[in-house]
Image (cartoon, rainbow, N blue to C red; front, top):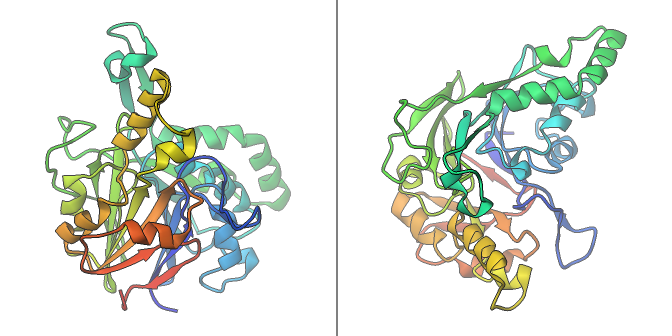
Length: 337
């Protein structure tokens, strides 16, 4: 089994996405696994991703060892639909193998919310609120499960959870980088080992900032994950010449499907406009892939998550390369990208 990309889950949003084919046909939360040199690199860990990885067992390690070859987890941002299964990866580690040492979880750094960021929230003018980053989130998770961790560790003479996983706040390239950078930003390195080199850049996911995209370069190719974003010049720069671009998409009819026919009450209209403003229409993504010069475009993080693949594929135009409407557990060989 060679290097490959696997889509563990393709649904956007924190709800369970049930497809029209029936209640047993559900798209799992957004998560991708990149297998390189016998190690597993995860990008986002949405709802059900730990179960998907266990059922798939991509390295044939067996149920009790399936997580042993995890190399790192990368979070594009801290919305719950991208982080929800982190707790399952942490807790299941006691029973399903775990890497030697502490697993790094990379993700956004802390930020300050200002009242001006959310004008409709009627916050006190000039007020600020600190929002934790990845390190604080992982520390909180470890603390929340301290009783479980202590009992399992002491009963089985294993290491406690705080020595098995740690958060890494990705540092911006300089202190003056705006959180919602609309200017072209040079990608910077966040992780490098003997198998992969991982670079990142800021993308535009509205007020959920910082939001990151990742590029993985290895001997067998380059794979880029957009994360959640509106069309982004930074992403195009990061993805230039990549073999595979995994890009989020939103349905142009999302508003009607989820909220009915317009006109909408003001509060609902503002919500819908805000959702569109921080995602990429499926009709726009082909031009983005063409501009970046990637070889293969893989659609994922569908909003809504229950529409069939052929519908999404039919919305894409303007790209001369190969287009895949990704589905849960789809696999793409890197050497054949």
